[in-house]
Length: 211
Length: 254
Image: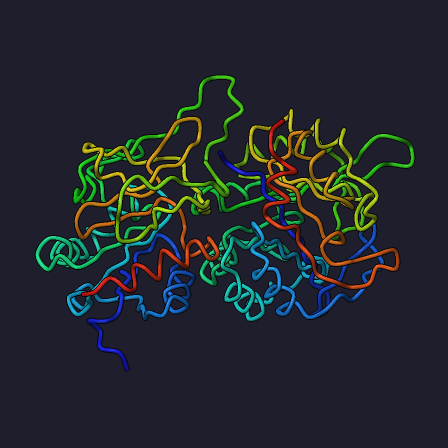
């Protein structure tokens, strides 16, 4: 039995299903639990905030179900490695055009909607496989010359106030942040759990961050 | 740049995997879990699994089997067959399915699309439109579970489904199903011009060239069954999927 500290805690937010995330963590050699009790998050040495759907729905769940305190404690007091996925990444920012609620605000920036030019063939949501370009050394994505592709499903994207918080970019009409990070807080707009060996490589790196 | 997806479509029938021709004559092609494992290893863009009996028999999706599929898929999984309520969709998403594909129940009541889209987002609900050539000429919307055409035109159904919140359309040319004799380019072109959401073109793919032509006709994704499970003139069962590099080259803009 692995000690909880060596495991990854995934808050059981009612905005998504996390079975695929748990599976890829296991395939990457780690252990993850879907945590029901916010008070229990303090035992975990790493956290994944996963979720899909509307920004306010996600943030309301975090506040109303008592996750805000334990998450802030993990991110800002204990400073454990935290990975946000999809909506989970967007919630790391200050706010979103999709809603009115404040985000977690751990990374300075705002979430904006894709706005294709009128008459453009560009479709929103941005859904499907796209390649990324890694911008700077970081704990989760290898800065390699060979192509890395990931599965995306989203209509909004994060715009970081400090450009150095952008880890990787992708392109959908405009260049947008595919992955962001500041210190121990990391985020991926795409779904590593649905991105074959590329997602597995990311998860392996996250699992192997010493803590 | 967003890539065009190439999606194997697997049909479930009596617990096994089958391939049909023109929606009839199911031929057993193997164990579904084994096939899904192979497709996962081949790093397919996405996978579509349709239970072709569930709606006709009025039964529930086989949740235990679908959960096993989801456990093998490190790519998006779309499931269709027998989904009639939001609650069933919720349960499927909970098992790790990304998208549900609706036909029979949506044709009866398009509010089901709206209800699922409102709760889980448009990206999670697909409408499957089967189009069949009428013996009098012209195309009809075909309802596979009833083995009968719908009274509305296929164009009208398409519009209603998209207005109701369908995030994608699976457009199947029934007369091409399983034939590997080429896609219905005209149909794809017309459907793609009518809607703003991605269209997944199915039916008739027999070569890489067919995939390229479907994409040129406007399809965001191309799905095929026979092309990925049969090999050679005698239709020997062999699961294949094009290499990523080959698809890249094939679908690169000139």
